[in-house]
Image (tube, rainbow, N blue to C red; front, side, top):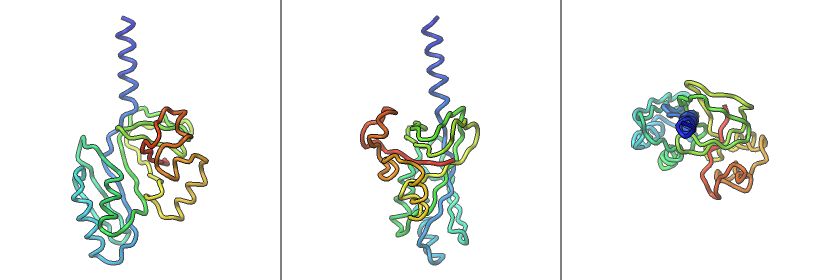
Length: 181
């Protein structure tokens, strides 16, 4: 009986830290015309987990809908934009969360990816929530400097686990996405 309760507790806990990312809002920089916008749109549509891309040319934004139950790779989105000749100025991703406890400067695995929350302060995410990826290659240089000053952890600069991450059990060079709520 104790084993069943223990397994049930583990199962509930493992489900509690899962999320399905459903959509994203990506701003690209370096666009100068509608042909540039189209080049980025076409590149994003070729990404395997992307279902649909809608463009707001005035804001240089791409509203991306992900395929259901797909493995979303944020670096894949960034690579598609860079392969089109541009860069990412902002990436906000939306997921459906269930009782996800977050704290500032803690690493959490969500949907198989490691996230380092730069804010949150004992917050619980339930339902649909949007997080902003603030890694160096997902922001303008100015915005990254602002985020970099918010923490002393070295992993923000590299996007990979550093000595500061060992306390959370991460192995060296684990990919870490730095996010804010």
